[in-house]
Image (cartoon, rainbow over all chains, first blue to last red; front, side, top):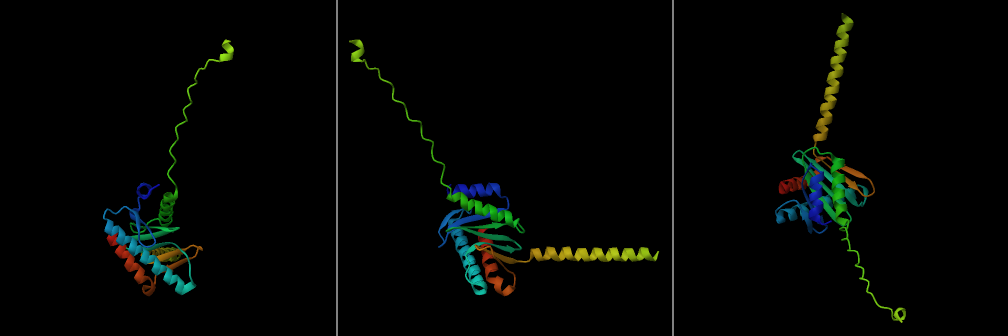
Length: 140
Length: 67
């Protein structure tokens, strides 16, 4: 599934998500629900900085740990960042969302990206029309 | 008559305690915070102003950009 289709599906299944950006580490935007390309890039950059900061906090407290997901709850809404392999998704929601459900939907969206498109059905091979050949032996 | 007054007082007291608890719980839920989950299953919740501020600032910027 491509990024546009995965995001479309995400918006269908989750009414809580307002906007979402799929990106790779380094800031490369793979897909976005935000119309403006530059804004989507800025969101990806900020989200990456957010998780770098979160990892730094963890390193300082308990030693290095691999980031999986985060939620920042603000009064105006929540910001989610979820990682699956090299891909990340950042999303915004209304205030006080159903946190577990949003995490699940975002993770599903990233996994949808990994699934290869269903292979096209190959047409059944045509049978060669039988050719009638006279048997020389039969006639003689 | 006296026992009735005591009962009313106890009920009022219990009601106000329950109300305060609910109010505090709701307030705590509304507090701005950052919850970070790691691959090993651990979770760090940042709510103190000093440690959470840089992340809250970035999140506010994301909300602005995405709106």
